[in-house]
Amino acid sequence: QVQLVESGGGLVQAGGSLRLSCAVSGRTFSRYVMGWLRQAPGKEREFVASITRSGISTSYSDSVKGRFTISRDNAKNTVYLQMNSLKPEDTAVYYCAADFAGSIWNYWGHGTQVTVSS
Image (tube, rainbow, N blue to C red; front, top):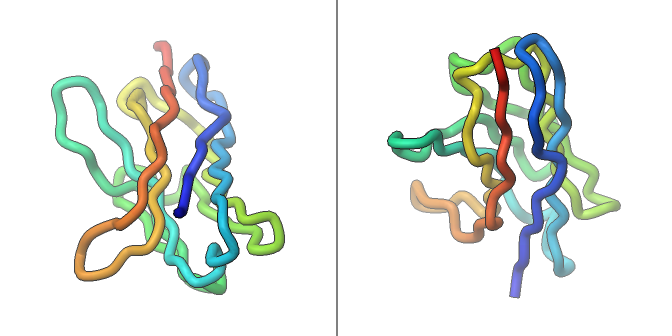
């Protein structure tokens, strides 16, 4: 069974930075496309970023492009989200997801809260 555990969320002032981590159990981490999604209060969950199995290719939503960077370490079974120049509108619960197939993510973490104060 695949388990995803996020960490690194917290409270930060606008313009600040945070680095989220997602540790994935099991031996199949390198087989999965990995992603980060977020859900703000009263809004639907939205895509933030994804990274291919090898880590060579990444994809970002327009709202975070140029500010956030997704990366992975297949030796550590961990995916990261470096968030810079944070804005109050980045406030949300951030979820790590694994194994994007058939337009759905098959595995999810429980989420970590990110709050950006103005």
